[in-house]
Length: 273
Image (cartoon, rainbow, N blue to C red):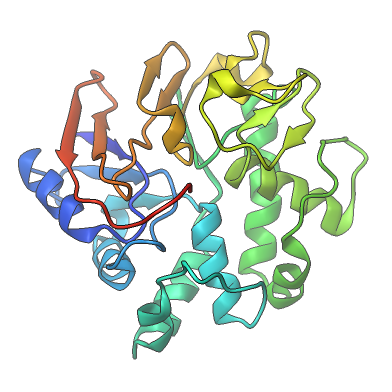
């Protein structure tokens, strides 16, 4: 049995299948941990969802910002972008079932010493606290009031965590940190506009994973979301968004020994993620 983590798919199904063939992935014995952004911008979001849904317990998925955008669209919330390419999912006969499955995926998975999350963790969060906070969002998404939560979920304020936050503000900060964050300050104030490489941080900010005394550093965070940061395999960090969507490659890493596998991709989209 092997556990593999794979970077952002964003509707790039053919590269995923080629990569899984190369590593001889067998759902009867192996598990695939997806770091989020399964859908959107690429051409095969429907095929990606059908495949991962069909893997059952062999696919372990966390939610990314593009996944949440699709969920919101299904239930009549949020704003559509001209670059969205998930209309095939919305129109498919099994689309509602697939999106309901997606809505019930976790925001964060702790697997041994690895933490799988789409974007990152704020520096003041321990892994234990982050897991508890993610569970609050997961309950809101899976509960009967999920529609009201989706209506209030998106937005960039508040931009920092406080333990006394309540209601929609509390859940929104958790979602933003775990699915949207790239840069933050040492005290955990997030910046949502800059999308360049880590060494181009806005004044006063740093890449969230470069803050040295973060409480989550008891574990190794496995993430995606930031194609401009590229592949990073370092103590306490595995970043796997290597820009498949933009003509880079799709990356998978075997968690037990750090073996890296990559599949070259053709370019599907323009601009930044």
